[in-house]
Length: 521
Image (cartoon, rainbow, N blue to C red; front, side, top):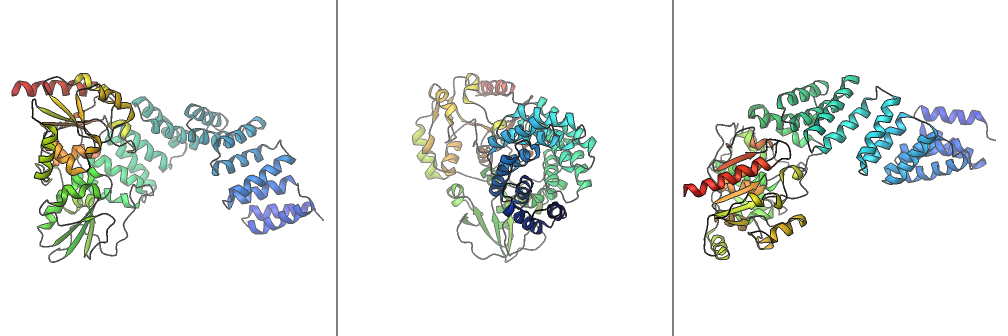
């Protein structure tokens, strides 16, 4: 026989975390009263807690047939649907809950899902409704800040993000996540010192906050503080969201302390192709330390590196590795060699094109009639920062003066650029560029390479070619701040945006410098 005491006992057990015992009592009650709203609803909550979201959806939906006016049940159904990635249905459930009862949590979760489906303005409105009900809702201010941070298309959005993070921190001073993201927005705004201060505040709250260490390292490296920057750069391997999984080698990591004499060390690439090209310069130094070097690299770089002396044994990533005594990822080598701005090795050149490839591409290009300019205007769209570093081909065409031959050095072409390319004077080779050995030969046959911040900019610099690198307002850490040159590549010249997402001044300077090269010939 059902009685209120049984239900109350189950409710208290559930409240105390004894969910299995509570679940059994709820199920027993349902045997006598299959449509009992409270039991169905609370069993749905238990299913949610156990991450059995489909069962939760079924139970709460059935409960709502008995009591369609329960705001909490509609809200909890929305939570189940959110976990099932049925986002539009989740919003409908949250709307049903809000129509019955105005609750800050209802608005908050609704805002989260609206943001997930790209309804940004509606998401902000929903978070603001939550704040009207609960003015000290730090998490709502934080989520609004995240939305503006992720937009990151202009300084106004970053300022709005910082404003909301500040409000969250004012309410909740130990909000380490808000301090981290505030620091990132300050970094994106080129306010590097305040960014570092914000990271330090987050680390004071949570000394093991690896994301804060990582982002602080990027700020330190950007301003040339390599001594501290390289140390914190190692925190990348402890981050949950790092682009590459940590390699679980049994052999020890080498960071410059142990002698490598008569030993074998594995050096392996990580992150992007440009990173591999930039930091492979250290392999030559290590090969001169009376040791054997195994260099594991992506397949697309094998032909480029194959015949270069002093780089050790090349292994394509994915192949079985021979035995070794020590291992080190390429981007940890600056730390191992205590690299600073004054002692960067091989800034002149350290890569070379193969004669066979040069001859092949020289035939394709035919007789040289004018100075040759190689162009790279976009990178891979999958790169998280591609919207900042790349631009549409059509936007630069009017700034390319005559009296030059123009060649596309990139093999990938976005749909938006096809029409502009076909109506331009630029020669594009597309799939004929099969690997970086081909790209290197093309670069070597150019007088100037003009490139956005992609792997080809690193390749051209490593070849010692005259390279003009076009940088966004907030550059990647390796290009440092403000200067027109870089200690990594002596042949490179840097062209920086003066304003976020505004390439016009960069293009104007490119045009003037191209014309200037004609006058000097």
